[in-house]
Length: 208
Image 1 (cartoon, rainbow, N blue to C red):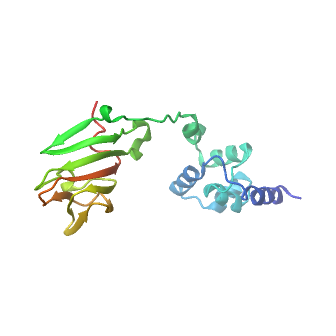
Image 2: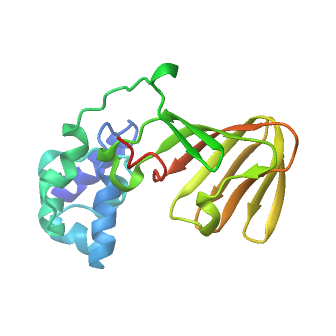
Image 3: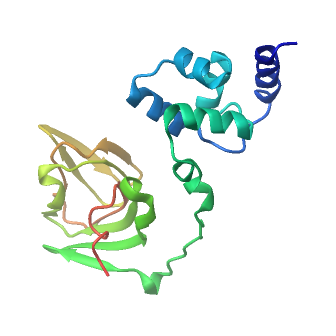
């Protein structure tokens, strides 16, 4: 059996098991940024094209020598590949009396999840937003990078998104790209309260 046949056999066997380490996204992004095809990378690393494809899709955990060969071909620093596995992933609990709060023009924001700076561009914040009657949010009126999701706990109102107006009420779930202008409007006589999640973080990222 040739080395290439060995690689193919290894790939088929490993594909049946879940890959415990996920290098695929990083390998693929670097390969595509350099303009290399799967075939070119496979030939230079001395492995099969199908194996490289399965590694990139996280269906196979590569043997260390295969990983080193791919890193060399793509000129990737191993520190870059392994940084996620060296990082500690603590669980953070924020109790009600520890929540940070922000008031903006009468609208109250109470933090649920504190953004983690180690997440870089993937930071996330979650908060309870309370909008008094006949008031609205303001920060999203010009749009910003990222995505927002929300769940209306009580009350009713409107989501103004671009040129569209959406009616929202208790029990509704909401999701949208934050790049377009958007505001939450409470045009009722009752308080509007919702749980909101934003990524990357916007409001609490600069708070102490």
